[in-house]
Image (cartoon, rainbow, N blue to C red):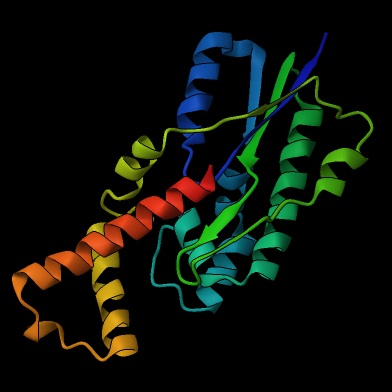
Length: 201
């Protein structure tokens, strides 16, 4: 008997570790297709990022959501999800799992949006999941993971941008701030980041 499952998560939840655990548990019996892995590896995605001048050679979802408009990301999501579903349809494994995130977060615009085309997920009559799993992560784990180097809220990358925006919006001269004032602004950024992560749950 073939078992289908959809495993979804909000932004910030690391599906890669979940997929590794499933593979260890079910071994050769499971086929896992990850929509985001497919999306970022597609040539169409790489071309779209190069067209807008994204300054990276190895693209992650961070760059996809940062540089591309929602409409383009949704179109790429649909292509990637369709490809994943096709692979699962053709799979010889008895356990077939589709993984992905229901919401994306664009750090450049500080906005959430859903790339999901639910019609695509429900229109294929032979791909009805027997289980739908929604994963939720602890906000402090998410904060720890997402503020590390090269992650969405990397301190070294995002705090200077935040301070630059404050200078522009409030007419503050950073060089004139005392260490205490600068620390206060940095703590404001930390609080804003944790509030963002809490809203993702």
